[in-house]
Amino acid sequence: MFDSVVLGVDPGLGSVGFAVLARERGRPVLVWAADLSTPSGTATEQRLRRIHTVTAEILAERRPEALAVERLLWGRNTGSAMQVARASGVVMLAAAQAGIAVTEYAPLEVKMAVTGVGNAAKDQVRRGLGLILGREAVPSQPDAADAVAVAVCHLQQSRIRGLAGAAR
Image (tube, rainbow, N blue to C red):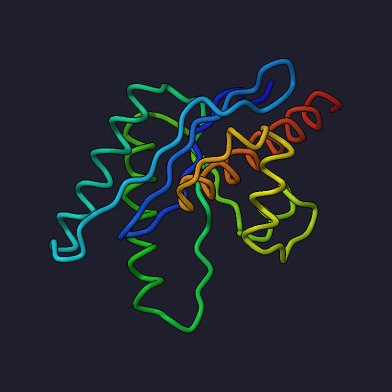
């Protein structure tokens, strides 16, 4: 009816956050989280290849039912946004190759799911994750913690969609 294991991803060219969450007795539980850093002196195409390869390895090893990724919001720094868009693309490609559905969430949606406030600061998101998962379960790496938040958002949203579908 709804996803019970999700890989959350906070994409970027320099650093990608990954987190696998499972739903146990109706509550999200952190299974695994990590950051992947790519060296800034390396060619962009090689960094993207590394992100794709690692994402594919995580999908094969962790076997999530879904992949949730934070949607890029275009700001003033279009160069940085383009690099994040490219990283998102190779993550989504790895999911498609593995036959895993991808759902994108705007930062506002993620913050609302974790804190109830769409413009929450990073420290508020960390506190919200601590309340949801337990403080010791929140990764210290910022990108991994952001990936956890994306996965929490997806578990909430997939449950709501599942319940709405069952009500039809």
